[in-house]
Image (cartoon, rainbow, N blue to C red):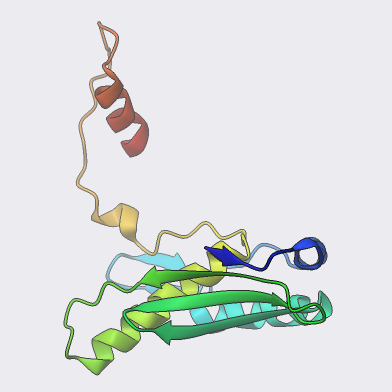
Length: 152
């Protein structure tokens, strides 16, 4: 993450933003995983007016092999930014690259604005079903405990 020397005004803008924005609803369906998620256009629509009223600008752009997301306080120029390395399965396929950028944009916006969205876009549906013993007779190791916590 990068940031300007001061982010005092940006922080105040974020506080105003969070006072105006509500929970982002899930407006799209993933038929493959039979799950719902908040689409990129929906998220952008929901945050645009609160960002403007709070004096904040959200900017995203491809940057080499990544996607950079910047949140800028319009009046002071204070900013925070982060770059996510894109995971493109088919490197020479423009459609696959565009899909990776769109997916990363959605999660980067959610992260940098700390939006209230309960959304794994079907990731939980891809996990195999794990059998956890009903009774644990001995204290689990740290590794076993981490496994149990992760999949419950």
